[in-house]
Each structure stands twice: as C-alpha cells, then as structure tokens.
Length: 170
Image (cartoon, rainbow, N blue to C red; front, side):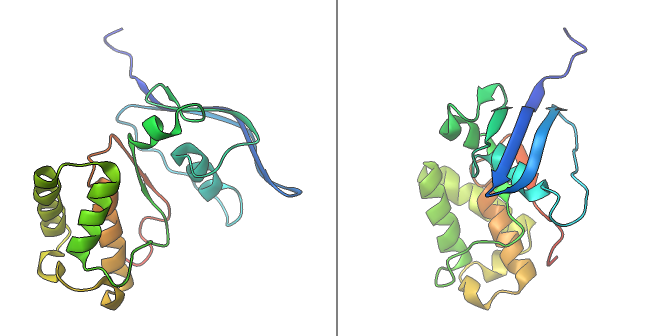
C-alpha cells in the first residue's frame, strides 16, 4: 500500500437540481492526495454547484460525498473542518478591519487566540496585507478583499483548499 495515494475527495452519483433544472447529473469523481484538480467548462455547467456540494453548502438530491474519508452528508461539520473554501465573491464584513475579520473567523473555527494571532500575521504578511491589517475592508480593492478572504479560509489550517474562480480580481 506504500505506492497508493489516499483519496481526499470522493463523489459518487451526485445529482443536484434547482427546481426543474439539473445542475449536476450522476457525477462521480475521486481526487487523490497531492493532486491538483480543476473544473473547466462554460458558465452554468455546474462547476460552482459541485464545489458547493463538496464543501457542504448544498445538499445533493442523490449520491454521496466524502472528504478525507468523512461522509460529508452525514457529518458535515467534520468534513468542513478539513476544507478551506474561497468563493468567487468574497464575503467580508465591511465594517471590520482585516485583522478583526481574521479574529472573527478564528473564533468561528475555535482556533485558540495565540495560534490565531500567529497564523493571521503569517497570512497577512504572506499575502502582502500586513500594512492594511487595521483598515476596514470596505475600502479594499476586489483583489485585497479576495486575499483577505483567502487568509480567512486558510486560518484554521485546512487540509484541502477549494477555490471557485480563484483569479477573479487578482
């Protein structure tokens, strides 16, 4: 078993409908550890919907999803703890500074204060936002908002990074 890679994400027979419109039909895939996986296709073909199903933000109408062996439908919280999700439109609280936003996110994930501060500083420095850490995000450019949201997504040190339209605004 030494040469085999562990499956990080498995989807089997996933179907998702919105009203009478089928966004995903009977989709199956397996993504192995250390793989880079991209979904390509025209607008409206179900890419974002699939990512939202894997991340636990949408329930499929049929099929199963697991993340690192955790049944994402039966144990959504445990599965979500493994994932960093960055949507194409960053969701920030405009009246918070970048630093306050990361403190807020750390609290949601239950990251202890000392670890959260260290990790937030590392991420803000890496993403070239350190000098803007005390500015409200309402004045940020789209790229700065995207980077702040990325820092928030990575703050709890997830095992899987899922990006929806990752270069939008950067």
